Length: 272
Image (cartoon, rainbow, N blue to C red; front, side, top):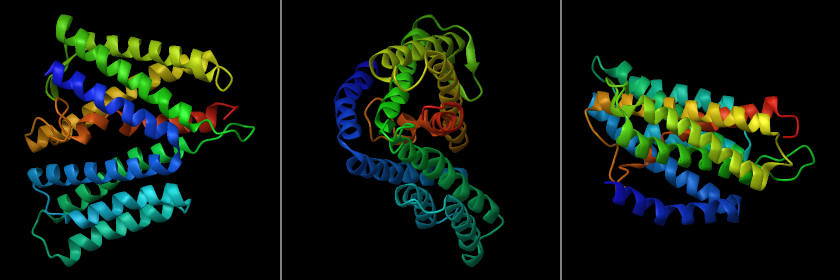
């Protein structure tokens, strides 16, 4: 399993890095495709839990959030449409007593994947500093470096020396030792990237705070997807990436950490 994970990482990482580096158009296409596949996986998990929500409603609601970020129209409108669409889908399909489960799964999926993940990753890539210079690309890389370092350290150290379970009822393989190691190595990875690319944009204190904050929220984000899989009685959300499962499995850490980074930069950092 380790070598499958490593090979997938070696193959996919350069492609991802190049797309993020090249520009907003290819990056937008990448996010749209990833969101689409993640929504499909979420729909399959929801059906395993017992939801009868229609996949097209979930896909439309989730992708609408991505379009709102790309086309700069009101995200409040996207929320209203998603809410209306979920209830309309449940009402007009005349479902059984699980109709409310279907409505909530549609709303959860569109917010979890479309808004928290896709919407904020698109906004993050579009960010500029106080002088109007684009800095979003570097912050996307900053986020990924932290999460990649955290994921690798948590997996390697947790599997070797981890003895105390972090949340055995949700994710039996995760350990406290692995979580702490991931938090520390993720922060160190963020500091290294700051030294190379972000010294003129953000201070070192903000960098340390963000390293710890993003490390913590990404672990909660990871566990949140485990909650969904646990209820669906599956180990992986899919099988798209060898050794990693589905795209939900691979991108789960970004779901909560992306909005945390975006709003931290927007409201607490003067230079952005």
